[in-house]
Amino acid sequence: MVSERLASIPESTTMKISAMAKKLNGAGLDVIDLGVGEPDFDTPKNICDAAITSIQRGDTHYLPTSGIPELRAAIAEKLYNDNHIEISPEFVSVVPGAKMAIFAAMQALLDEGDECVLIGPSWVSYEPCVNFAGGRVRWAEVDEEFKPVDLAESITPKTKMILVNSPSNPTGAVFGMEILEEIRDLAVDNDLRVLSDEIYEKIIYGQEHVSIGSLPGMERRTVTVNGFSKCYAMTGWRLGYLAGPQEIMNWVNRILSHSVSHATTFVQWAGIEALKGPQDNIKAMVTEFQDRRNLLVSGLRDIGIDCSLPGGAFYVFPDVSEFGGGDKFAERMLSEAMVAATPGSAFGPGGVDYVRISYTASQKRLNQALERIGKMLG
Ligand SMILES: Cc1ncc(COP(=O)(O)O)c(C=O)c1O
Image 1 (cartoon, protein in one colour):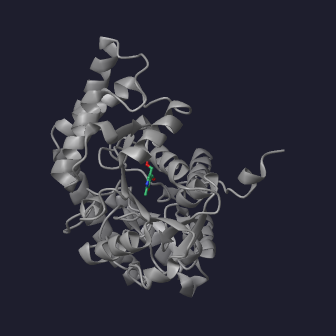
Image 2: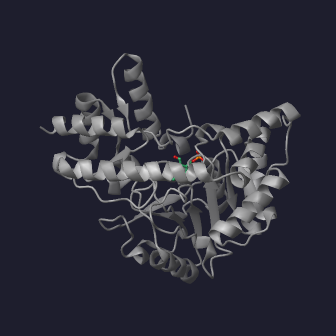
């Protein structure tokens, strides 16, 4: 009944787990939901106020596809100051969420049968976006810290693109300069594009985020994606952006103009406030996330679960192969311990031994979750 192209695209596991947890909670059970990928903080008030003012001003009409010039200029300025990427606002497009940015970039860059390299366990929507565009994923191996090993072996004559996501969802791995230079060299030598999803750039612990688009030789090869969902706790607002070379962005804009048209008008004005207003909320949120990460990693290790210390994002990705693998472990966590987490298999074949636990709940709830998992393991 539906196209063959769609038949192989799975439902989003993270959305499915979250719906299950909500259903159980709705039935009166006390499920601790550590399956979700969104900060448990409110959008800062100054950003909400900017949206309200914008609605009251009457900013409720259509816009040009790529967004309001003031926001595109603010994003270009941010990319220059924070990421050392020099790009004209003309080649920045605002979109309803980073997910749409990734979808549109894949549509613009991939032809039928082209390959996109994903480095180890990767965010659930990358592979479906590649498949929607007619492309295929080639999975690159990673080490125990989820850093690439022998990346060159994943490059074939069909490779068109490498996807970089640092800090990573689901592993929390952060790629330093050495790895990014290796990816840059491969891209230059093999004439590849890099799609760099930097949505967790500011949720990083004691390290500097480096944008691959800032490396010499990458200006014309990189499409940088970012958004407001994670750093500004704006998941429901649907606001993201992408920036890249003119010839790619022209096509991205054509895709957007015939699909979503543009991101919501007054949400874009709120985005300006997010970028230009006070940034202290991010600092407070990251400090809290870091405390939770430390609590969760040491708590899991104490109950005998092997867990590396992630450098960024708000997930831990412990190895539960000793307990029957990620699918079985996540199922037990939900049915026996009433803790929702996401099986690592949702993030590709390299994730089957793992489970992703989000630390988007209070330290009190995380302690309760650890206690329940500890009891479950006896
Ligand atoms: C790695 C990664 N990229 C992109 C997104 C999508 O973000 P947005 O809410 O801006 O669409 C997510 C959300 O979970 C994510 O984890």
